[in-house]
Image (tube, rainbow, N blue to C red; front, side, top):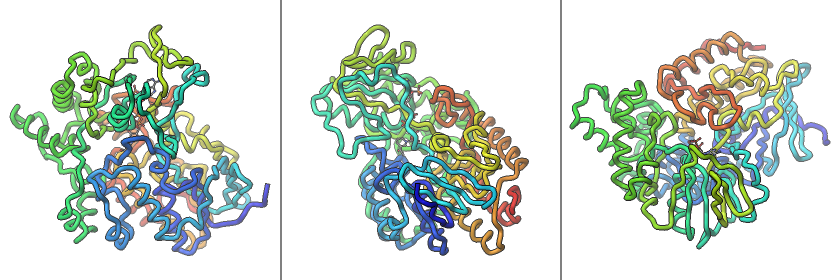
Length: 533
Ligand code: N01
């Protein structure tokens, strides 16, 4: 193995978090190296190339705001940007800010060990590259480790199979093929209408029906773009503070669902349905507070499904019975309509799960379903998966995955006690996936940069979460999640989609502005809750 190159900071991942982290630290004069497994930038948008992939946050909002020139220059074409356009944007950012020269592509970090004598992170990769860095920044993404259930016999399948999160870059031609897709989360709900248009026949295997709201996607109106660009910062500020504080435009009707008349219920739900997208749950201000209140919204969506899907048996199977919003709401283009096609069938695998994969297809309840292609839209080992797959060791050789065996433990989602100078961008127990991710990424990257620069100015060597502050933060995150309906169903927010993963609610539900203010106060108070050395 070659000798470790000495640098100031190593950043793992070249998605939106890693790219901006590189830009900020390098602009501040640090010697920085990014390590990226893929052969290009873009993270999520590099890997998730399945048909129909697009962002469920509106395009004018889902972009960096650190550069006015960048946000003025870039032109989105649709209300919800398709994956190729977002990847093109990521590449444009990499070129514009000359980021590639500090990114090592096609290289995977395998281990990061903290050397307590030198106060440095020793980072090993699957190539002949090792690094020694004062700071290690994990920009590994929240949804980047795919979850492929251990289906017996998969290796015997004679057809082709794909996971939506690791889609072949050359694309897949499903023309006239018999295709089976497992899963009905966001990835499946986006890809099913596209697969159905191409395939000879498509069979959807559904374990849990999901709530989905129409995207009403369209070309962006020129007037709207001009209006936003006339004062982009004001648009950003309003998105961050309005509504549910998720860094995204949502006008909340400030009324309890229990105070609404039958006519008002219909009116507000219908109006949000017509607008489309995530904002549906802002029809009233307490839809995630009680099951009774939530049920009004859930039943409204079920009625829409029953009206859309012509076959009543299929329609009923597609009606979800969990709380609406406890799993991330899906945003679709013609998802439910697709079940009216002659070449699409729905199979319920809740009571009779996939038993095994055969040479020809899937065996379920003693019946074999034969396919040319199988698509697994089975999601991700979210939020902690990518961190757990690396051998990360802090003080006394403690492995992060052992420390987190019963669930992640962090202070502010930014760092974990016993792991000095290790930062996690959009880490567990920060708002991350409950917000417009790019807003949360920018907030974390700016905080970490300011922290590192402040340490350098003061000649400090290490920063590390105080175990007491960490315990209090973990309690706080759990307590406020417990006041909502979020933990009430088996979602990836809870790790419940991965067999054996501890059931712990991982994102911070308090909203981005509240959270960012807490981070600012910590910084202003000499990084209170962190131990500086
Ligand atoms: O994954 P999921 P996803 N047998 O975990 C099923 C983001 N995203 O990739 O619900 C049968 O939501 C599983 O069933 P169940 C977005 O944040 C964003 O779709 O566990 N089925 C479920 O139906 C999203 O929330 C965009 O019962 C099995 C599905 O597989 C997140 O990524 C686009 C199974 C997995 O759904 C994850 O979405 C796409 C088994 N053994 C995704 N195991 C944007 O627009 C799992 N399933 C930005």
